[in-house]
Image (cartoon, rainbow, N blue to C red; front, side):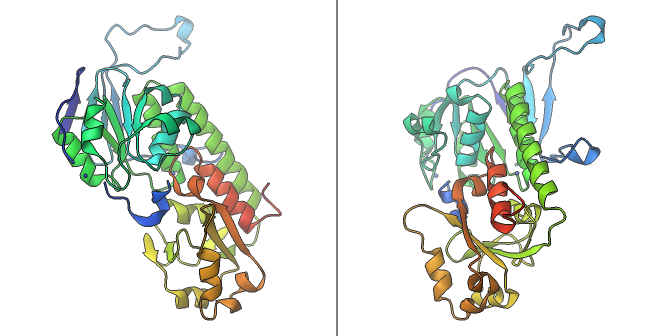
Amino acid sequence: MRKNHVMKGKYTGWIAGWLIVMMVVLTACGGGNDNENSRIQEPDVAINNEAPDNAAGTDNGAEEAVGTQYPITVTDATGTELTLEAAPTAIVSLVPSETEVLFAIGAGDAVVGVDEWSNYPEEVASIEKIGDMTTNIEAVAALNPDLVVASSSLNAAALEELRSLDIPVFASNPKTLDETIAHIEELGEILDRGQEASAVAEEMRAEKARIVEAVKDAPVKRVYIEFSAGYSVGKGEFMDELLTLAGGENVAGDQQGWFEIDPETVLQSNPEVIIYPDFGGDNTIPELIASRPGWNEIDAVKNDELHSVTNDPLVRVGPRLTDGLRELAQAIHPDLVD
């Protein structure tokens, strides 16, 4: 296992490289009620707090809430071990989902750099940008961050370059709603924002439980989602899971990951509902759907069951992912979910 030990100090030097895959993130994963299945399992991430030997106890056995004990050692989704000597005070985010998590757990005041696609909350507009499709390594290094948060899949090239400069990086790759909630909690632990992160996590769990309960007895509808013009999503990704939780059956669920659609396959699957993101302004997906041969015979088209949903909450594995789940459920079962 590689180790990346972070001490107090500044980082110097620079280099240049970030590849964003699938349009799903360019504009840019909570159990149910109290039971064992609601416990988050995150095998890719391990946290080890080194509490001082003389840690104070509590009177009469009552547990007292304490913050994160440093140094703290964590292992990220790439298998890289990272040790933090203190709570980071200068953080750079390479992806919009991580930016949203940082602000949601109250760490926004420590954010000194974000990617060009980070647009929420509105406070990020005034934060220095460090690249879009490619991370500007020199710009990141110039900010002297004591932590960079990133996606292990979208930022793979940048991770190597940043680590070669001894810049501390923590990368994640949640694939489900539960993993997203677990990641929010782990960042809260790393950043000494545990209470704030727990509040966000519990709100997301409650919303998931509410929606799942609302649609549990409803007939499952065949759903096709086109998250970007000409592209859909299959098994193994959070968007497929959200469709299922919302009471739908993904007609592209026999494939894996993100892929370019075969219009004939969708026609043969005859979805009852078609969902696409609202990018705002010019959106060509409805026109594309109308122009595809034979698609006028699809049940969703004949019955006017084409629905747009807000793009960013649906495609970002962050605190608004349950907002995306709710919009999917409202599109699939509008009479059951408010």
